[in-house]
Length: 451
Ligand SMILES: *Cc1c(COP(=O)(O)O)cnc(C)c1O
Image (cartoon, rainbow, N blue to C red; front, top):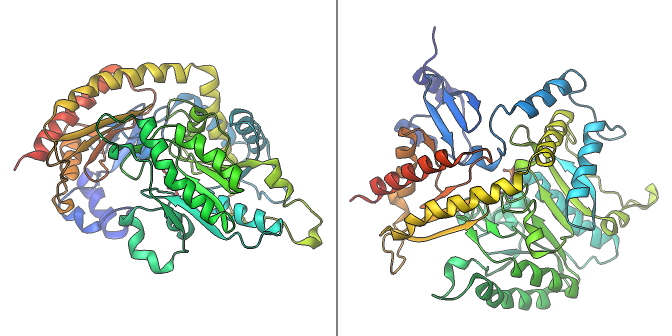
């Protein structure tokens, strides 16, 4: 029997349960079975193509079926797929750790692997807490986080996040955290710069750090862009001030670069724009070019040394995942970094980003757009009911969902966050494709704001 989109969709819906989805939606919205990917394009079973404008949930950097990464993986597959990573090691894991240490902000000299972003966040939280404990500072048990932040879906990661949609249901299960009003520049005063607003909002963070210095292990933050929190952005000065204050109050800084790392923010890592080094940096998503699940937590020698002792003293970090340091995933990571090395990716991205800024500017004129904002290779468009008061559409109307469906019908994969439409394309996208993207998004918005 020949498979069609419909036959596969039916089989899927009779057995699968998809992430971040009210499955009942699929009574009306078809699920799309993808047969193959090539560059920025995804192709379904029936040959319809979709431009992957969101890098397949922010993971893909250099396109689907990238020849360089494919070749590396094929070679690795015939060599070693996986080996226990306690007591054993392998070249791809070593080389990737060496490369990450060399590329990451100064002072980050140790690499611990896990297998997804949430797991990396859990590792960083546990390491920070455990560091203070090994140092005899057992009163340090709390984490500080920002309003509107997102750090993943496992219970620890969910607890330090602040997006109500994901968190509220599970609140009774989550550890207590200290939540600080954020620097989200959407809320700056008219005429106020991102930097001025970010500095002004930092005062609220400083108060909290001072008040909780005794009990706080770490502040966890998404550098420059709160991606899952509707792509809200702020100025690097906030990170600079935060680094200094964390030093002053003896609190760790955890930079969650899972979404913004690997060039997305304009620099290889977003922290570079503030010229800071965090105590922990979490990486995943783009780490393998969007091929395989892998994450890494980079930390300092100071942290590492606090765990390094005779076995009998029981100070070791015993956290583990079965697939820690998976050889295929590490090799995909290495191949991804090789592309950064061999081609002027960041330079090209800065031209692409400038082009995106130019062509997305037209959304500023739209009567239902309150803001167009950008950091590097992320452009976000804030759709509202009333441009002047910024009154939002009731969430029940699902305007963003209408943009999603319209875009799909025109061969573009956009996946708005609520009513925020954003572009986060693979770095190999062309100007022509960006123009198509912007046209489809414009028309999608026109459809979505009717009635
Ligand atoms: C996606 C994301 C995570 C979680 O990563 P998963 O691999 O989905 O568990 C954590 N932090 C940030 C900033 C993210 O964007």
